[in-house]
Length: 298
Image (tube, rainbow, N blue to C red):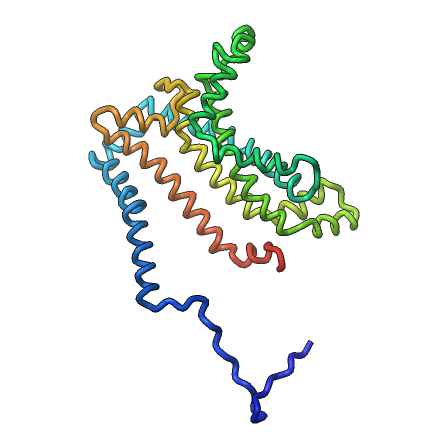
């Protein structure tokens, strides 16, 4: 299709007008807003982050290494990694299934399912941990049956994993649902019309279209799983060297002297957050073109 050039009243080619600015704020106002933002980030993000690493290395590299290799701390790190290894894949499967069902199909109770997915955002993590204690504790609903069959959930790894799954399961689903809804069902319908079955449609059409949103959801879910405190604190019993995770170990060490050991463990959690953010930024920069093509309308 050929676009005809436009002409002004004198018959000369009309000049294109420069695009109008989106906002009309003066440079002073824009600079002031930028300054306020930077000061806010420096005060509430940068300064605490620098303080954590400063206190962590206050006794030198040897003191730092001794703090993070102490047996109870190693046990807490090990427990944190195991819980993340259980909760993240579980939420990955649930998130994909729930997002696919909500975005691609119409069924009764869809709004209820969406509400339930958002439930952990509105429920205190402490309440979530307490719910599992009331269900699976010694005096809980299923406690006597579990004791009779020699099954331990509360104050053990299964309870910690259940509580962590509860507080983290919205992250993957909530990242995928709006993306799948925007993309619609056209690609899947085309694949089915060409003879693809449901499994082939998912692996070759749906999953490639949402892989970046899925990756972001997994990164956020993993960071939250490793940093969860409230729910885990209630259901773990805080048994030192057995059921403590890294956040709980930080809380215990902060009540002792010296507190540099607490900052050493906290620095590991801070480093995890920085790695998660850096990886997300790198992926956005490295695959920006491919990500834009995967969005609706391209």
